[in-house]
Length: 83
Image (cartoon, rainbow, N blue to C red; front, side):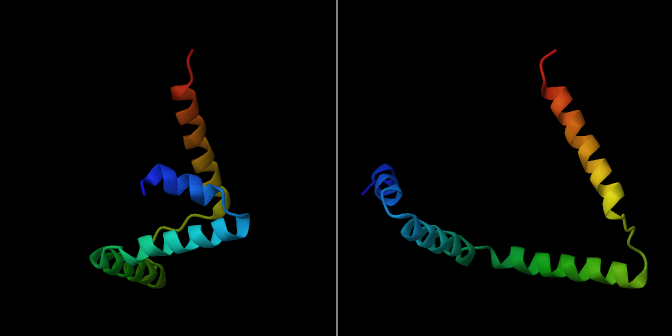
């Protein structure tokens, strides 16, 4: 069975069966995850938590972060829009 046929058959399933299939497929991707990447994320989280605990992290409150993110997104949109 090729991917197109499988996709068509999956889309013909009832919504609850499609949701279950999607869950199983997504979980299968996590099973194949690189164990080195998972260990690297744990190390990074530990490093960041330690930086917060020892006061060396530069923390930003949500309002400031949101303003900066919004400004960056606006600049990207403006840069992509035709003039």
